[in-house]
Image (cartoon, rainbow, N blue to C red; front, side, top):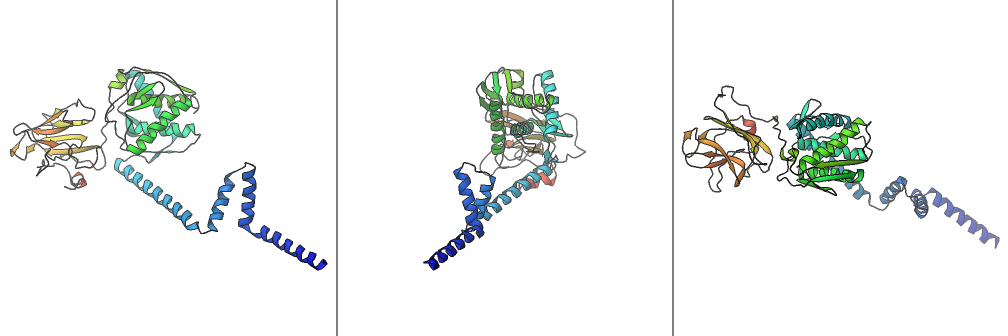
Length: 373
């Protein structure tokens, strides 16, 4: 009988030693105890990973990590390409953006509209790009993060402006939601939304940017604190909502105009359409514009620069091309006054489906090769 008890004691001791020396069983025991007591913390996540490596799931876990790393590298690579293309900084800290809000607020108070561009660290940003910097800064500050803002270049204006009169107050949670919605929309679509839905109305693009700027302007004047609320009282037909901020940036791949190009007798056009060109000028020899592609050849709806000889490929005559725009082509186009053939501002491609002709490009090879001519 005594021998049997001794054997039982030895077996019990052996089992206890096995449990104590097994990292997986020991950790799982600890985790189960903490979950029972409602005390789940970061250590539990570590335990889950360890347990996963013991049942053959390690490969899936590592594969997921590698996928995230690859995506991060792709994002970083794309951002570096954009930075090189636009020639600006890759990142800005929050203090720099808060300082910029001061000059923007001063401009709006004086002129009752948004500026066409905002200078930060000696580099000019368009209002759509600046709106992203504002919304991202508010997103981080609300979540108490000092993270630097990765600049997003080439953000487009909305295609159609919509909105209503806005009058009322938004608390911090509500204005944070509208800033986050703008940020998400830009990251997904690379353009500003037409409006932002809030409890005080549909805030039109220009007013929305002004509201974001107002939040950070207050923060700059109050030791980086976030305001408890945002008050807006802007009519739908306010001057600010009628003025469309436009900024033409000289990109690093831009064409170089021949220094011998004549500068007299230029005709400059101001577009009547929101999606029209930001720059249009021509004379009897040359056609120059910064506009959107109307023929689809570029594959995107961003602004590009185009320069051509004022020469109709049908009439074989110089000086017959002029600028026109209308409901059927709000982007604008080059039109021959003799034969009425019309061409895309960006690519010079004729607006017909079969066997289109092209205007004669008058630019350096960078732009020429960019679209595969």
